[in-house]
Image 1 (spheres, rainbow over the protein chains, first blue to last red):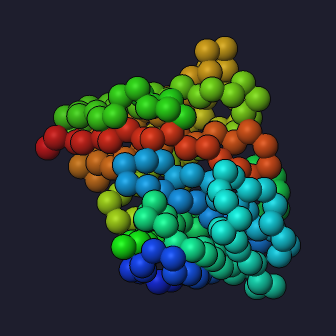
Image 2 (image 1 turned 30 degrees about the horizontal axis):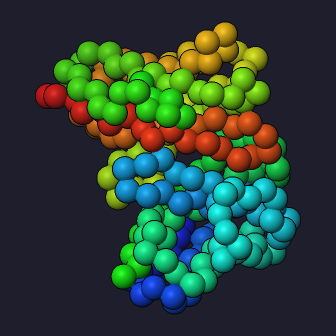
Length: 114
Length: 111
């Protein structure tokens, strides 16, 4: 069984740029969620994708967007990067669609915005 | 313990002792809870979960207790080992599959 994989592991961008982060879900999982984890904090929910559509969104501006593909993999796109976007971005997959099921996390992408 | 919210950011225990990490949650409508362990440089790792129709659930060396009356969750780790050193998060699910995480409790096991 393949776990959740994320790429890249580290990324450095400058303010105003755009970034795309990628995630492959665990085999058998059809739902992907994205979380932002600032240093010393718990993960914060960005949004969730199920059946290739956004299915729930946290308190993040529209410049945070995503996609889910037919193979359940997903992308997180962030436009007009700000310094405060520097964080660990975590992808989590789960089964069961929109219902409450355990999340399995990848190791994350560490994004630094300079 | 933490409060999805943190009361006690750090906890130090001797190897072999039992550890108890507490968590206070705010939303009485939350019906599903998960404890995660996060080691440095890694993503959160699932430890154990519990639904609101249960008061207690046991796993291997871990027990989660849920007190809905006072909105309190605890994680008990038996015979704590050095490999248990990590940050522990409780996460509550209110609706759909959206989880709210506390700021975590850092557990240090002293050999």
